[in-house]
Length: 361
Image 1 (cartoon, helix red, strand yellow):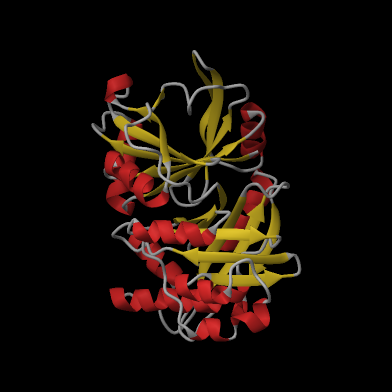
Image 2: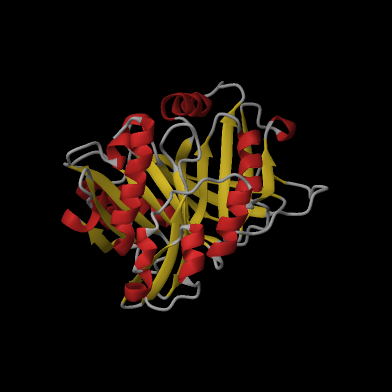
């Protein structure tokens, strides 16, 4: 039915919540911590439109889950531990997935409070990432039982810069992309939406391969990347090295006004990848008319791609933590259901410039 939440394990959830509120315009909507019964972890739920991020940090690792979170942050740094998927029937979804090869991490269980009931189960995917299958039909609480709604603060809500999660991209080891594509096909019934191989995603120095799997409604889209052989270290190799294995590389966020989003986020300190002026010199010739004039796209370093269904505008942040791992994409769609194939070369050259500055190319 859609992405229920993206759950991050972070070193300091309170500070991370402040960052996503200030820099990404998200509102805190729920909290769980020592003050309301969670002695071991603190979790802040942030929302923007239909998108939810859950930021969790360990206070005292007294249980297996707390120890897992502590080890995860120590090994991977701040990163995504769960791409939770909303389903109409958690029992049926878990049974289907595990009968078709998925590793079950948690069998379906029910939790309840005054706002109703939620059923959830969990399966494993690449690296140490999981998919929690969430059935929340009729639940009226702010997030899940055990979470309290965050009271409105004295400050006004930040301006909304995005409305939904468009897709979530995973990086996996060399030779494993097709294995995980088959996993989503078989265990979750996803179909193959796009694939980019060979010269599709290649520069003079590095290359990668990518295939996109999606559910039938295209509400849940997961591109899966793996490195390809090149003269130098690819962005996927860099990610795998610094993250310590496979994991979620970036999250694409849907916005209905990418210019305002970029302007607002930059003013709050978010750094975006740069695009050389030469990209915009011929942009109008092949991209055609877009909602945003080329001069404005050039000013904000926003990319354009067009296909048979329409066009999209997109831009990518630099990594949002000290390790060169997780980053974000802002995307404004006008018909196109693509992923910016026409921009791959410009994008990956920009990433390579950042890799070179870090000494990792």
